[in-house]
Image 1 (cartoon, rainbow, N blue to C red):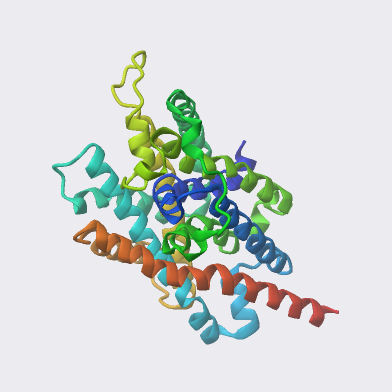
Image 2: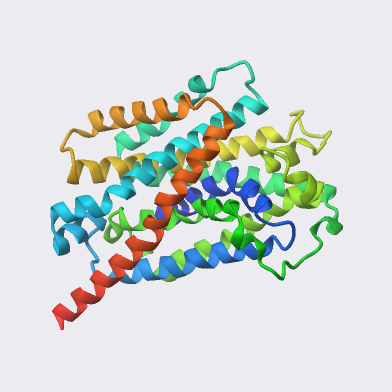
Length: 356
């Protein structure tokens, strides 16, 4: 089963970004036809990932740092990849802060936010152990996480009202004018990690169809996370919720399970996937910084970055400040998901011509 671990990692890092903020953003982006922004974002990543992988395929034993160093030099690589470091840092801070907020709202109202953000210690340890440890551990976490998620989905069906999904079409595509839609695209950045791990060490990733099939399986989750609260509460009500899917799970009453709240299952899965995501993001930051900017030890860089994330995420005063940080992150994200894949693809073309 370990040969499938890289695909499972790819799956879980996407799941971490789908489970919590994504439903709120998509529901807020339009009053009808929510499947439209879901599919637009989904296929946008599909195209960008295809471009990215085509470029990476030309450099089979190199990652982003090696590619940029080789073709444009170290200083240019530093400038070009600096936004990627900033994106990872802000993204990690946002996702930990959001999950700390979620725990505060649901289970730990008396705890200060900053104490819950100390959960960063878990990803810190995983990042310190290295990429192979992170990827291998995802198999166990996946086995624990997925039955819980599927169970949560199935038990919500009894509360559905299909009429809440109407109208099915937004002919004006109004979501394209909504900042919430563009913020939701953070859930489509998971493919970037493919350029920062040693792909040649994982044979299963050499066949790109394996990656695309795994990505296609995620479409169910993109739809489920948005439509579960809509089908239970309607769009007009769901859009008012801070965490619509959490509230949807909390509304389900199942007398035959030993726990009073189904939310516990859902949050367990959410935290499991976010630990994988945070560990991977922290490791990628350390890897790039160590090779391009500061040649410190992994231990020192891990502690510095974890402390910086804690400082930013743990002391954001309000939920509005979190939303502002998400919007700042959105600006940097577009550079990372548009410019970097295009640059890698272009450098791949140049390399092919030189070889010819």
